[in-house]
Structure formats: C-alpha cells, structure tokens
Amino acid sequence: MSDNNNYTDNNFNLYQAYSYTLLLQLEATSFSYAVVTDSHLLVSAQNCALEELVQPRALHDLLSATYKKVIIGMPSTALTLIPSSLFNEEQVPGFARFLDVKDHEKVFAQTLDDINAIIYKTNDSLVAAIQKFGLQNTVYTAKGWIKAIAKTNPPNSNLYIEIGKDKVHFLYFSLNALRFYNTFEFKNEDELAYFTSFVTEELNLKAQQLTLVVSGDVTAGDKNLTRLAYFFPKIELNGLKVLELPGQIASHKFLALAALSLCGSSEVL
Image (tube, rainbow, N blue to C red; front, side):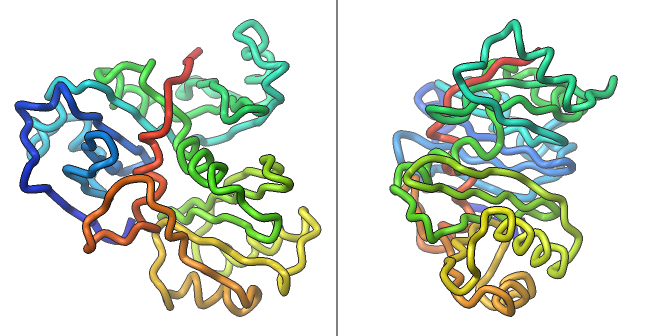
C-alpha cells in the first residue's frame, strides 16, 4: 500500500489478546496487519517492513501476544486452480509439478470456494517469517477477498480488481459462480491497463458494458485509475465493508486484509 493506514482503537488492550484475532497479509517485501474482535477493527497498519515481522522491535509486544486466532494471507509466485472434486492430499504433489517449484519455494494447497481448490507456491523466506505463528494458520492471500465478493451476488457485468504494489488480481463471476481468477505482476499504469484489457478479451467482455470494481492500492484520480479510464468508461472503488472501520480508513484500501477474517486454514506440503 502507498500509505500505512495506521489506526489504534482507544479500547485496544493487549491483555485481552486471547479474545482477539490477528490478521497478517504478506507481500514479497512487506506485510500488513490488523487486530480485530468480532467485526470491529482494533489496530491496523499497512506496508510494514518485512524485517519487523522476522525480528520485531516496534511490534514486538503485538506480534508476541497470544491470540484467540491467527490468520495469515500468503502471496504466491505461481498458482493453479482445480475443481474441488479432484482435490485431495495424494494428488497435490502431481498438480504442484505444473508450478515448477524451486528449492527455495514451498507449496500450499487449500479449497478456495465451493467448487475450486487452489495450489500455489511461495518463497521459503516468507514461510520462515511466519513459521512461529503456525503454518496451519495460513490461507491464500486473496481467499477472503474472493469470498467477500462472492457473498454479494456479483453481476456478470462486473470485473473485480485488487491492485497491490506490483501485482494485480482479477476476479470475475458468471451466474454467481467464479469463472476467472488470476494474478499478474505489473510495473506501471500501462502494464496494468494491458493486463486488464487482456483479461477482458479472454473473457469476451465488452469494455463499454463492463464495470471495473477496484480495491487495493488506488486513489480516485491516480495514474492507475486514470489510465484504466482511457479504456474502460465505468470504474468504481469497491465500497464493500467486511469490518466496522473508522472514517479515516478507506474501505477499498483495506478490503483484502479485512476479508482474511472470513477465512479458515490451509495445508502445506
């Protein structure tokens, strides 16, 4: 994220951590966190240095507390979706071969929704950074985002986009079923527009009839949205709220992190 969105509720008390949930969302070189109780946000910060997760100083007390639940969103360097009907532990290594897993990478697998499972790989250094929190508490980074949007009965005319610092996620539903999900790394607004156009062409969607519903590291009128608007006349910031948020936090910037609260756990191979 381009800003930290730091927030602390006046009622936050680490002595009550046993009743809180800690959400961690990792990227390649940074992470975001939130502490929540029920649907209420207590503490959050985004774009924190990954070193603080490995050897916490400023966040030592917060990250070493004992929480009721910890949910960790893990990013991928490659992924594949398979029908849930084909998903079982014995077959995961076979599917993982398509990901060209290197020695410095580890494979995770889990159900993504009612009809899809996801198998993905991520860097060993990130796995080492969160090992102390328990690998059983990891989920795919976009699982909550996908689940939150699925609950809204998304129309066929919406293409959902989550924009990170250097990665963009695309999500499309048809007849309330997930039809397309994928990610791309991008360096600038032109590459973002290219991948968006590529996805719409693959899905046979017409720009004039499509609404881009955007969340993540974006602000109205920024260079990414301005460039997208050149090709797509209908763009909306995603106002979906998973948690009760204070007024200073824009819900579209917080959506993917907050939506981790909707998730369960995964398996690691």
